Image (cartoon, rainbow over all chains, first blue to last red; front, side):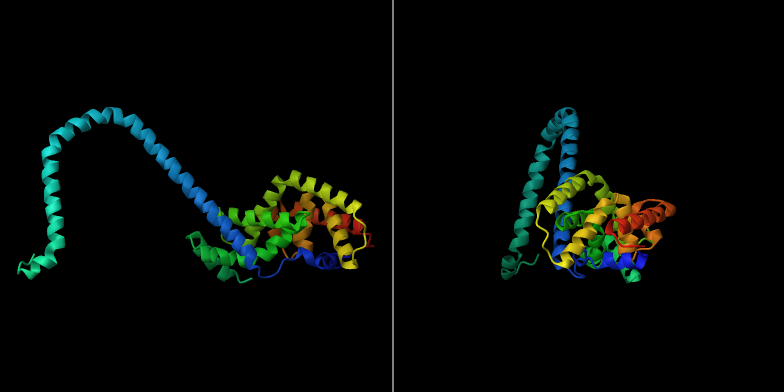
Length: 105
Length: 175
């Protein structure tokens, strides 16, 4: 059998040839791509979360006493800053109403 | 195949464009599936393998070197997957042969021809089957086949020659 005859015989095997355009196949591939992307992202976030947990578990026993003493010292400043912040937000949202009373901020 | 256009699509796919990648899949799916269908016995299994090959190509598209076409890249991945799944394919080939022996042969001449071609192909070792599928049944150059199969050019030519001789003998057509 010549190569051309063999080629013709193999190429006559029509069921071996899928259609030129097959949107169903493309959709199936993209669905698997999305699934792979989801699993990769999920794996990345799980690994990152585990790393953060491990670091915190190692560091926090040393940091906690320092944070507690620092926190005690900062309580007055935190309270003052919180009140100022709340007043600022309230004033910001009240601006239109205050404008009616002739107060422009 | 429009290579410059594919090069642009590959660049876009590398930068994360799903639309570009889906166009590459759409353009190359026929060539890849036709190649894989000749390696596998069942068309459904072949399509699953082709889909997995495209997904792997998506995740490894950064490794696609310039000058290698996308279909060559995906066919190479599919061939390596087929090699890894050889044991599964062999089991399926055995089942298919048993089923073929049990089933009354009263199909049309086209179906008989297909079965004989498929049966003859399945008698070849996977590397020879792949080389013949690419260069005789398909329109791939010997160099492209060498890239896909990861073999030296001389080995690919030898596989094609041996595969052609075996196929000719199995199909019973005189040289």
